[in-house]
Length: 311
Image (cartoon, rainbow, N blue to C red; front, side, top):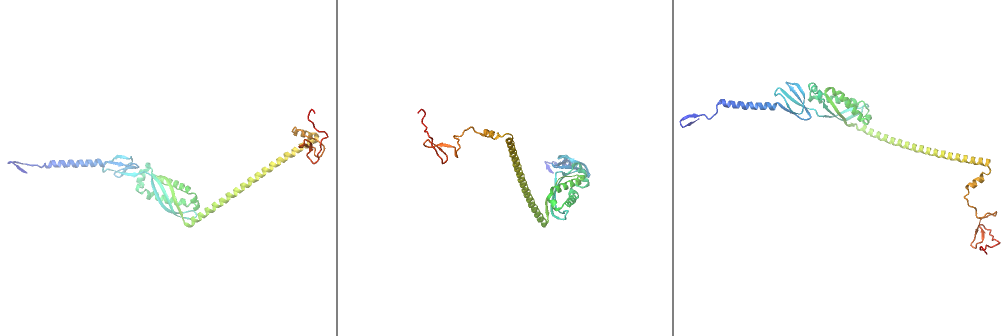
């Protein structure tokens, strides 16, 4: 307090009541702001919100985005409903007691949102793998592997995968787990067995190769037989045709002695010979001097000379 020219002192501080009112307003504003912010919650894409009221689930399908809850009274848990992946390595035994030393498998699954409340109540989201996935995968995989011999397991890998996936789906579905895929990523047997399998595969491939070669040889031989038979049949038909033709000629000669003359006339080309005689070589030709000479060693000349026409 200060003196002011002998007047009454002036109190520069606000009264305690005013200060108290200001503080109360500030505290109330903070509480309101905290209440507003605490009543809002966000749910990201790929998640679903589960709302609890005093520990009891009242909403298990809160959509992604901004959502409202009652502060203190209600809480929200976000559950990842995207596809989950469980991977592990284990060992197993085949039907013929071969050891699978390193069996690497992968399971893809997701939650059935319609059964999410029961899954949370009965199992708990954080306990899904330890209480459901792990024991079911171990049991079903080992049991299914044991249904096949080692060689069959290698040859029918896709069949084994499909069988395991189907059985896992049937086993986990009642608990709200949806199996989307299953894969056997690696099968590792003992070294001795793998070498024996490789040797057997090579031997089978060689045997198959020889078998195919034998079939090819047999087919070539069969084709040769067919070709020879076809040729023989053709020759037989031709011989029969010629024999039939000879019989016809003989019949014609028997029935008509003039048949030979008829054939001569039929085959004649219409040209007459230059000379006809009864000597050894009846054919003649002109020599350089214009005299007729035989084509053989005997020659002769005509008794009269040929003169030009008109002389």
